[in-house]
Amino acid sequence: GIQVEQSPPDLILQEGANSTLRCNFSDSVNNLQWFHQNPWGQLINLFYIPSGTKQNGRLSATTVATERYSLLYISSSQTTDSGVYFCAVFTGGGNKLTFGTGTQLKVEL
Amino acid sequence: SAVISQKPSRDICQRGTSLTIQCQVDSQVTMMFWYRQQPGQSLTLIATANQGSEATYESGFVIDKFPISRPNLTFSTLTVSNMSPEDSSIYLCSVEIGWNTEAFFGQGTRLTVV
Image (cartoon, rainbow over all chains, first blue to last red; front, top):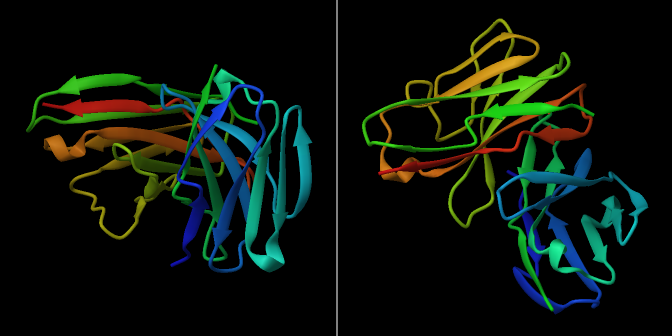
């Protein structure tokens, strides 16, 4: 099956810093989503982005499907950005999501 | 989008017992899914809940351990049967309104088996 790798696995930032999270996938995908999992375990939808670039406030995402990667940019990080960030891909075999390995982010004061 | 209510939000259960998790959506949806997230791990799909027919299970998951019901287009349940400490995980339901559209998740059920 498809492999979805995220980097870095862990990241510690000072408040106000910027960061880039990467998601690489091993095969063609129909679609891609980015999620933020808060400390209580809830998954928050960030972006639904099969290709191109989208922005939402301090966050933006870019997917280059032909090169099989996606990037999530966090600018001016805040402590509330802490948590785990997952990318997940839809594959051609169905409407099921395959999740990446995750990036654990901690933003410190 | 879709508003998903998942119950219970957390539970502590004795080994050997069963727990049923409910997932209610505020609108009719085509696709409903159940995922498991073991401690410190990513999410893994357990099964697709099909309306009017048996669920479709992923490799490594079986109906006897994780029976699923989907009586209509807005509701599904997942039962974790004969639990052991290895079943301690977050269980999440997910919905998609149409084919190849954005997925939305319930708030999850944090299960601890003692």
